[in-house]
Length: 249
Image (cartoon, rainbow, N blue to C red):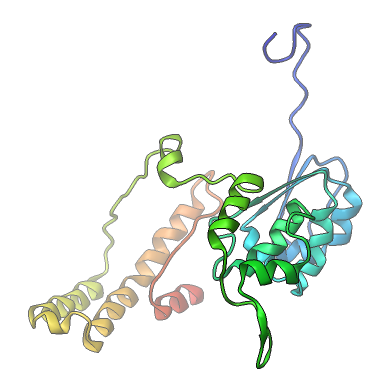
């Protein structure tokens, strides 16, 4: 019958999406989708529970790995109460197997039993000199098999890259005479030989090129933000001195 069914009826209207960007934004009734950060969700957990959402998607779900954190205490009951839950993370256990337990329990509460039992089996947990130690790893192949069979859908870059738009790289030339002089120092340090490549002098020279370009880059970013239809962008910097300058401009 295709979209809309055989009866030829109209498609249902798309749900209204509400982006919560501050604590002052209202969570008005009737919004089908709410997009909110973890920090704001903690502050407004009661309102979110009252809204009665049936589906939740938690991006970067490893942010909930510590069950005793303020974030987890506020949001685990909320996420555990929805009918459908999707946890998304590129690193569900950033450091050790014990970090996966809270997320696994959210998705299938009884799959691993008690936390202590899970940690004994998969985190080589034991009573150490300074208390319970669950920082290790054990039976990792078994844990991987259980996760892949019962909880996880894993997609690698190679599997999904064909579905993504091509990456576009563009080099922008900016007018920054001081940067040219600082770069001349970098080239001079390089000419001194391989031993200079990672020297303190070279690091300082690279930082000076960044500082010299900071104001010109900020001007370019300001023009981008002022353009029609442009709201936000991500600006990355390597040296703290450069980030501090951008914060002041």
